[in-house]
Amino acid sequence: MALPARRPSARRRTVPAHPPLHADAAARAPAPSRRSTAVIAFDAVEKRYDVGAIGLDQASFSVQRGEFVFLVGSTGSGKSTIMRLLIKELEPSGGSITVAGRELTEITRRRVPYYRRNLGVVFQDFKLLPNRTVYDNVAYALQVTGGSRKDIRAKVPDILRLTGLSTKLHNYPDQLSGGEQQRVAIARAFVNHPPLLLADEPTGNLDPETSIGIMQLLYRINKTGTTVLVATHDHRMVDKMRRRVIELSRGRIVRDEATGAYARDETTREFAARLRNDPPVAPETMAVEAGRMTQRSIAARADEAARAGDADSARDARIARRAAREAEAEAEATEATRS
Ligand SMILES: Nc1ncnc2c1ncn2[C@@H]1O[C@H](COP(=O)(O)OP(=O)(O)OP(=O)(O)O)[C@@H](O)[C@H]1O
Image 1 (cartoon, rainbow, N blue to C red):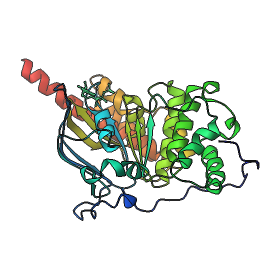
Image 2: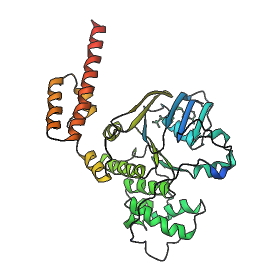
Image 3: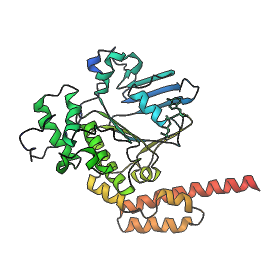
Image 4: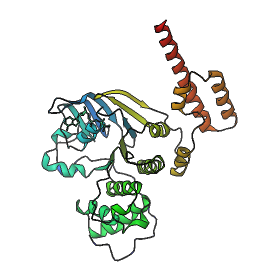
């Protein structure tokens, strides 16, 4: 696609918040069930591959609108299977999957493309069109969903600004860094402002500093109201983000917790700053060092931070204290079993 003649508008436009997700309005599938208000609901989902491998084993979870959720777990635990079921690249062997209350098995093959218009999907390997520029890669996502030229001219510069790519419009993918390529992939996934964004290992090929930028971008997108589901191996990032975590093991959900939900809304600038500064005592560090750290010193740290009015430090210390208590209890229980 040719670049529009006029230069992208310098006007700043905020990303619109989302209307409720309509999973497949155009697909004219049966009316949504009223039993769930969740954006995503997995109910006892089974996925068995042809060769007998278990992709998912009785997996049940739901995600509400506006949530930011991490899927974690070791290799082969079922994260990608969840993503592929959600984009209807795979069909479940049992159970029920609903997106915005609509049962996915009721969406016929023919209607799948319409359903997918409600999803933004980002992969580890970017999947950019190599012979198209940054601008055209993003514009293409609008073209295939019937976007008008006017629409494209209005939306593409906006999304490239949001993703920090305004100066790279004319570059081809092989003229970009890995982080920039992933930004293009995110821009492409988000240009239609889908209510649900799925990212499968979005930082898998990136260095830690670049990964922070990508997570910051996903966080910014989430702040516009988009529900974000990220499958990742990046535990460090997950711990730093302190968002909801669903952990899988051999296709089963073994943990689902809202780790460290924020007490207040952060700006993306504050969020990035916090990611770059290690918390005084990170939960992960605490788990490792629990044996060496006395509860008294942690409590003192919490009191000190609270007195100094540093809410973040106080909160980190509180989390650390709780982790220490749990780790000590666990250590005592292990010792008791051994003796
Ligand atoms: N196409 C397939 N055919 C057969 N088995 C498969 C297929 N895809 C996945 N599996 C199996 O299903 C299980 C779950 O795989 P899945 O790709 O969902 O795991 P994952 O958690 O995403 O792993 P990774 O972190 O390595 O990407 C694994 O045992 C895997 O070998």
